[in-house]
Amino acid sequence: MAALVLSAAALFTLCGAAPRQTCVVDGDTFWLAGEKVRMADINAPETAQAECPSERQRGEAAKLRLLALLNAGPVELVDDARSRDRYGRRLAVVARRGASLGTQLVNEGLAEPWRGRRSSWCDMAGQ
Image (cartoon, rainbow, N blue to C red; front, side, top):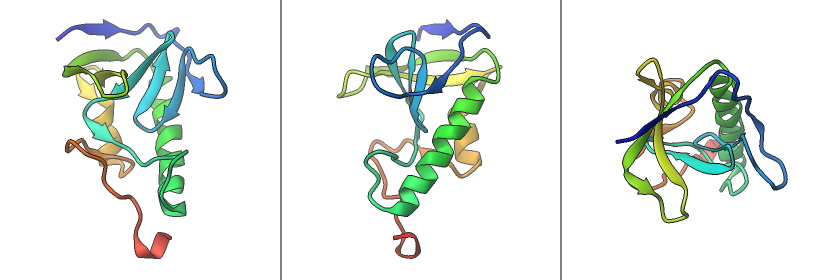
């Protein structure tokens, strides 16, 4: 697996209208130097295509946390065995000092481990 180490100078913002260069889309997807990257080891709640208000709220929290984590210092992108997903996004585990940022998001309750499919983030109380 190939790895790419980002410099501390990489400053992420929240993504807006195109063109997207270095910004965060949601809790598991971001753009780096014009390339779209999907975190391979997690699934985070959706923001733009949320199925309920609860999912959108969780997704916004995950997006803001990923933004903070990416801007906290250099990270390494370790390519997944699946190099691209069905949407053409690069798949990579994002790590700092050997620890996955995805695992950190899971531990903070903002994402779930990737299980090969999306899960529903909606519960009866949050709809």
